[in-house]
Length: 452
Ligand code: NAD
Image 1 (cartoon, protein in one colour):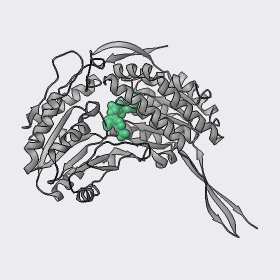
Image 2: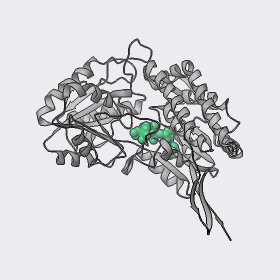
Image 3: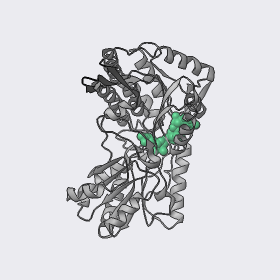
Image 4: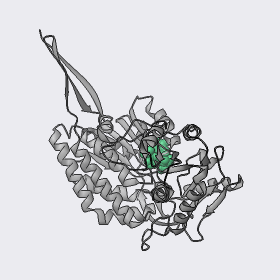
């Protein structure tokens, strides 16, 4: 069996090996998943399986959390929360249903619409929330009666492999299998003839490749891709009251979150007050390794992403930006970057136009609401966005003009199992969560019975 290195982002050193799934092994796994595809013909079996999976994950929290924290870099407390949320999502999927709908019942005939499983689902996840995003896929895929082959990012394979072992124990063989490997393994999965559905979370570039890979075989696909979320602060906002939530809406998970705040727009009159409040928080936040006491933010997860964030910040500074705080890596081993608040930037500078996915936030002044709505929408992304103000009706009106799959008022990032989540434009295709997400793991069958 071949293996690949797993690096601790707090040190930059290799600390473990993960198995590298070969094409031959993938064929075997796919064949087993295909053979198991009738596992959930009885709806009660699927529900019981998800309840058991949720319980098993929660019971393994003390084992999964340190593994996740070490390979991802997030603080242990945040990793434990992610494990608990993964279990919560699996449990919430058990409560969803795919009821058959009677759409005709008259003298001509009886018609009902039912939802059937698709078969083998290829699930592919990124490195920022490996377990939670796996749970977002496993829950509905299993609830709808499919089997799943799941591949985590090569930067964070270990916790998902362990999650798979924990879940596999409570399911029939072949229903869930986790395979680890590099990007090539993902490409083999999406091209595999036994796969009927691809559920992917990751970058826009990979999402486009996957859409192309799905085309020859017309595989169904759900793509949850990047974001460049704008937070718009209105002129009646109480800056003191919102600064905390705004800060964490951007910096949670060290900014490595698809639907985090990536750009802040604030009226000129409130600009300096807001920048000061955000900078104060950025300076006070405790950055450190996952197992350091009271740590709030860890390192960036991997070297390419660390270099990308550094490059975007350097580029902004070269274009006249000011780093009110931060602006550079921390002077220690690993991929630590100081929480950074940038001013003096605008559209046309890369950190505003692209997804930074790291701990650096541009804050930009605006004059009118029409102007700021245009600026929020002038992007290829459309994942989420938020509007902050005291008059919540007015804030809701502005929020409804944001071109994205999710909008928040006086909040950013509340994600719940019952709320559909997905982007428009380059941020994705389809949604996850709620019955909308569940339906994407099934196909409709219309059944018509004539009465003659
Ligand atoms: P990535 O696209 O590089 O990798 C994601 C996964 O895809 C990994 O498992 C990778 O091995 C695999 N992969 C790479 N090439 C592939 C290919 N050709 N075919 C199939 N699989 C392939 O993304 P990343 O760097 O791991 O994650 C960061 C990105 O994910 C950011 O853009 C972020 O916004 C996005 N993201 C989106 C959401 C969302 O729900 N919308 C959530 C989290 C992260």
